[in-house]
Image 1 (tube, rainbow, N blue to C red):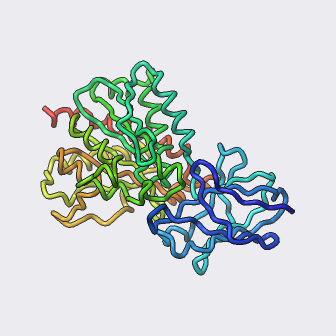
Image 2: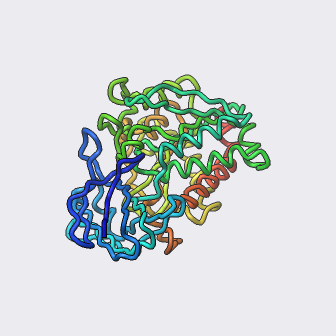
Image 3: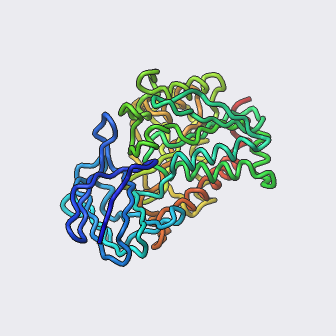
Length: 378
């Protein structure tokens, strides 16, 4: 055997500790200038037909250790189809993955990766569509473009943005599905939405963290979703550029798309604790949530985060900041790293395809309330 581990590629993250026969000891590297870590993505070569034991030794100290129980790692041979590994276990702080690869080239990840190369393909395909206006809002700390797409001609200002936390790759899979639907000229829902609203999309808010293989932060170790009250050019230019553009357009409706490590469900987090909360603002949020439950069996409202007390919302987070700053109907969508326990898939768990489909369903739910949003704006 000549087993080899590598992660020196777009979005990769792992550190080899030792190879002892069929047992491979590994550690997840921390985000740069940060203590956050949980995302892993690496390549194993030379193991075809060999039963290997991959041990991630430092998972007990990761950002969200409660995310490991019940979790199953992802495996791919072609980096298109990602299947779950049944023999994934977590004990005494160590995540152990037992598998016999069928090929000499196998890829392992925390969730199906969405690389910056795939992101560039997504943007390149979108910008040739006649209804898309493209701009770079500025450059990240590492000098990558912050890609922005504008679609539609309506008065309502709708913002969709994803991957403030780069390791939450399901968020950009969601964005891919939403963008496909929004640009489908044969889809009557999309046609109506483009008439009623102008859509502003930032498919990847954190290109540096995405390329570096970070879980939660940008190139200088900053959690972007704690910067919305006071973003800066030095620490969080990505948020600064997006919020400045929002100040120009206004925001009527916004979705910040994420993934949750521990909760095996899809759910929304709202803005209940903002100081200026209005009854009709909360009612429209609830209406959207109810429509999404009706439209998608993959969405539910029973599991989720604790609701903050009145006046106690964290305005450094985008959802609360936009609701307070613009009176927007804003929300954070969380998808699971594990599976949707209410509708499990034993082979793929929560997956890119399901993320894409939920993106489409969210636009259907938005369509169901678009006239009420328009009436509120008048």
